Amino acid sequence: MWERTLRDGTRIPAIGIGTFGSDRYSASDVAAGVETALQVGYRLVDCAAIYGNEDAVGRTLTSAFSGGMARDEVFVMSKVWNDHHAPDRVRVSVEQSLTDLQLDHLDACFIHWPFPNTHGQHARVEDRDPDARPYVHPDFMRSWAALEDLVDEGLVRHAGLSNVTVPKLKLILPECRIQPSLAEMEHHPTLQQGELFQHLVDHDIQVVGYSPLGSPSRPERDRTEDDVADMDSPAVIEIAERRGISRAQVCVAWAINRGAVPIPFSVKEHQLRELYEATSVRLTPGEMNALRGSDRNNRLVKGHVFLWEGADSWLDLWDVDGTIPGWQGYAS
Ligand SMILES: NC(=O)c1ccc[n+]([C@@H]2O[C@H](COP(=O)([O-])OP(=O)(O)OC[C@H]3O[C@@H](n4cnc5c(N)ncnc54)[C@H](OP(=O)(O)O)[C@@H]3O)[C@@H](O)[C@H]2O)c1
Image (tube, rainbow, N blue to C red; front, side):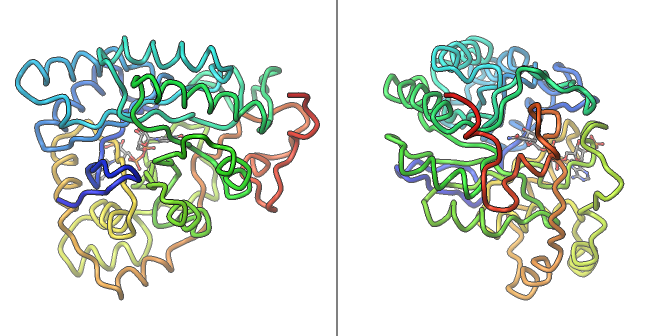
C-alpha cells in the first residue's frame, strides 16, 4: 500500500474514501459504507459539514475506535462550507464537525470552496443566491487565518484548500502564515488540470483527487450533455481489458501513479474492495502516457449554483482566462 508524506512528515494513505452521498445515498447508507471501507482497509475518510452525514459517520468512527482501531490510524478530513466563511464562523463549523464526528481533532480541514454563499447541497442550477459573492481575496485570507488559529490550538492538524485555481494560489500562498498541506481538486483521466496539479506539487501541497471515477452518480444539477464518462475513455478501456482489471481500477491507479490521493465514493463492498486493490497497480510510462491523452477538460462539478449576481457563466468560477473575475468590485 502506497503512502504519501505531507510537508511536516506526516504519512497518509495513498487512497481514501469519500462520503458525499449525492442525491442517492442517505446518511446511514454512507455511514455503513464507511464501516465497510474501514473493514476493507481504508484509513483516510473525506467528510464535509455540507454532506449532512457527519453525525452518522461519527458514530461509525466511534464504534471502530471502541472496537480497537487506534484513532491515529485513521486520517479524518472535513470541510468548512460556504456559509461559514467569516472568521468566527470557521471556528463554529470546525467545532460542529468535531462534535458530530465525535473527535477531539480533525487531521485535515479544508475551506470547501473559495466562494461565500448560502447555497445548500440540494441547490438547483436555476437558483441565484442573492448572498453569493465572487472570490474576495482579503475576506478569504481572514477565513484562512481563522483556520490557522485552529491549527495552532490543535483542533485541526493540517489546513487545506479546495477548488482553487492557479491565479488564486498565486494570491493566497504568499500570504499564508501556515502553508496548506493538502488541496482537493476534481481529478480524473478526462480532467487532469495539469497546470494546477504541477503548481500544487511545486509548492509541496498534496493533491487529493475528488470524483476519481468521473462521479457517475453525481446530482442532476452537475450533468450537461457535453460531459464525458471517464470509464468509457478508450485508453481506460484498453488498459483495463489488457490487464484484466476494471475500468474503475484504472482510474484510481492513474490517480495514485500520478501522485494524487484519490477519494472515491462507494457504499458497496465489492466496489470498495476492487478500488482498494487498485493501489497495488503500477502503471507503465506508456500506459500513463496513453491516459494523459484522455484529458478533455471535462469538468463535472462545475459549481454553477455558486454564481453571484452579474456573473456570466460557471467558467467565471474557474478563472479560465487567468484573471479572477468580480472580486475587485466587492468591498472586503
Ligand atoms: N472538495 C469538493 O468540492 C468535492 C467535490 C466532490 C466530491 N468530493 C469528495 O470526493 C468523493 C468522491 O467523489 P464523487 O462521489 O463525486 O465521485 P466518484 O468517486 O468518482 O464516483 C462515485 C460513484 O462511482 C461508482 N463506483 C464506485 N466504485 C465503483 C467501482 N468499483 N466500479 C464502478 N463504479 C463504481 C458508484 O456509483 P453507484 O453508487 O451507482 O454504484 C459511486 O457512487 C466524494 O464522496 C467527496 O467525499 C469533494
